[in-house]
Length: 80
Image (tube, rainbow, N blue to C red; front, side, top):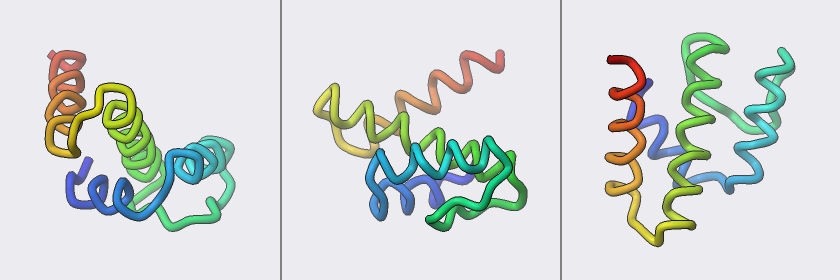
């Protein structure tokens, strides 16, 4: 998971565009938008993270940094 890539996706694409790209990657198809990543797993991770961050920004009325911090905190908790 690369934070600069996620930030770029959040700034460049809508939640709907990212959801369609995530679905395409999950179905082993080529997405209509470019999702950077070394492989399909990393691309899927970046798309999912960007979607979750946008959702948090919209629902909680927070900025990118706050939403990112919340998301990475959830990821860390799920790993440990």
